[in-house]
Image (cartoon, rainbow, N blue to C red; front, side, top):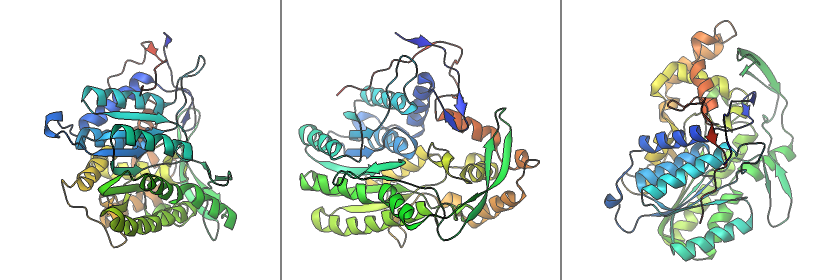
Length: 402
């Protein structure tokens, strides 16, 4: 037993510890939001799914919504750190344990593997487990956000860069000082060189997604009608210089081209489909690192309030489309669009007006700062309603057993 009271300690948007009870409550709330279906409504032949990047952000939403809404069984893959004598486990460690417990209580056969999703060893582990336990794979959700990737064939490690392409980008951004006071400032980011662009594409593009599909196809594990979706983001023109038109955008363009290549291949191989799913804005551990995104998301919440669509609700819609409960609808580029609520003209005009007016004197009236702060803290299990943070909590939580 290693119970203790955990208080938030952070450096900017990065927290040093996570709260197990808060992470558990957060996952439970997501499960309820996804409208869980009784096991008897699912039949004996529930879809088999693999969620790569299942412990945080939209990948966690994919795993929880898949289990609760679509009744999937299968495998989740993530890379998390275990608790130690000095530190708690990562938030994703505790969220995975909570997801596994909900799956068990609901009678869903779901396994969770911890390791490097980019490695061929992990691909072999997953393929072996699919072959042994399920015999086939119906769906694959790819949601990996990592700062670097080692190519398993060459051993070369690539590192991503958050930079514009073609010229210096100047953008407003939002940070908080040590006292938690908001600071709206302008930052300049120098452009990426060709090597930085190529390395970002190597990390965040479609190469590893394609390797996963090829590996499982080579093991003859793809079911007839197999579908796969890689989760993506386009975002607002306000953040385009650093995002969609920057190095990340180059990686997203590669991801979308990979989807078109895979789609043609899968149609011929097994009558399958490959798409990218363009999701709406959310506060995630990845997005808070991108200049301008924190400010934009806070302003968007100021405009829409509860009209923002949560990641788990978006992923519930994606699962409805992938499993045939509703038609699979794509745009002209073959992308499922779950971000339309964010990018309407009226919404973007309102956010743009606030963006131009945003400064230290006005930000409290323009953005929902309390919501944003709490959303960042909830990424680590803090500020979750219903949790007693003054009470000791067990930190030595085991990874779900196979």
